[in-house]
Length: 333
Length: 215
Image 1: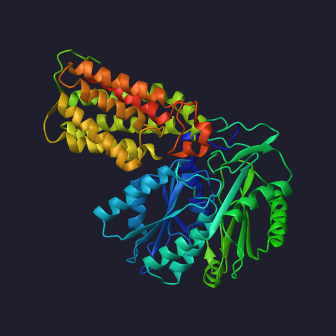
Image 2 (image 1 turned 90 degrees about the vertical axis):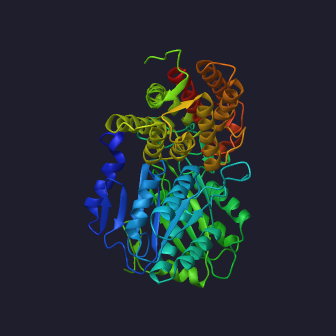
Image 3 (image 1 turned 120 degrees about the horizontal axis):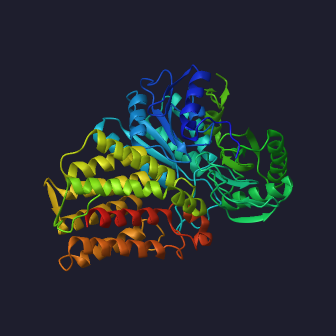
């Protein structure tokens, strides 16, 4: 497996060094593998911390900056960061108004952030509230699984909660907005090919050339089913249908439609998918008022895409439109 | 690595031998753990455990702890801060709870070690919320502590620990037909059936090395 890396053991640190070199308005702690906005802590503002395994870039480090996250902890590839990192980052971004932890619902992430919140309570005076994202409708039977995974809605939670924190809301208020976004978002993903974890050196799963996986997770976790390779039109149907079946998206405020690339699919193809998604949504009475198309929460070099719909209202729309200045999302600022 | 028969109690040096033996076993089985984890997880269990146990050994070399509790705590803290994933908090909590249960003494007798081991396993359950049959490390650990308790008094330490290791190995093998209900493997549903659980496999190594090093 060919990869543009030096030593597989150094891939996360090397990438973080690159982020530091490319973005002078970020501060990178290489020892703790934390990306900070350079002016952290912002006094009086609720601090937003997220983090997770590496390999999903630009999530989370690429979403650090004004209007979004104050810091992000990077784990090894597809491996949760550890409590020590989260504790260090929590201390580093507390401007006196407390810190929100945004956690994707994966067993390891939840356990490590839990331990970090326990340590923060025991060892610092920093108030911490955690919000877990779990928007992946591909996981059906959450009684007998680790529950729905946090995927595309995480990006939207980080953006919108970041704007709420910028408006000066308190910790409970920012957490409430974050939960509202997660509750109003649903996602479904698919893969054309596997990804390859650098340390493993071979594909995480085998997917025959003529098959695709519907309902894939962002670490190559299997989805609902494998089907013969299909056109963008048919794939769009397979993504939209379960999302619309899970929640009503015909509310007054309109919808944000987010077609996300898994890392190995060109933007050209993502726009082909977006065209089909938009067509189906229009036919289904869903009023799309905002869109996002591109690789924002990826799975290394996996080819494929995911669809996230977010039911907006006036407040969420205003917070989505608010200025943001990060390497991954940037407008109005 | 001497394992004298006359070991009636377990001291800091014995625990140090156990942890180093576990680290060596994890190193030896790293690829196997990764292979098992690629089948039903995300292919990182071998690399993560190996990285964590290397750090544990380096720390033991750098700063040898005084007393069983101090050693177990140092191992737990190092695992929590170096392994990541779910295994870091789970194995870390296991050793931290063992440390608390071990108390202040210089040695642990057979019953004291069994109690500490059970406290560690209870910690794993509290952290991971797993139940028997979920296809997790608990499926290897639970029968091991039961076997150890059952052997208490009747066997010498070596025999009791061997019984625990055998029970852990049987528990590991029993995970193959199970359908995973925890962790990333749970997303596979029925497709998780037919594969050994990687966490149960590393947990069986933990008990096997305990029997080898402490017996």
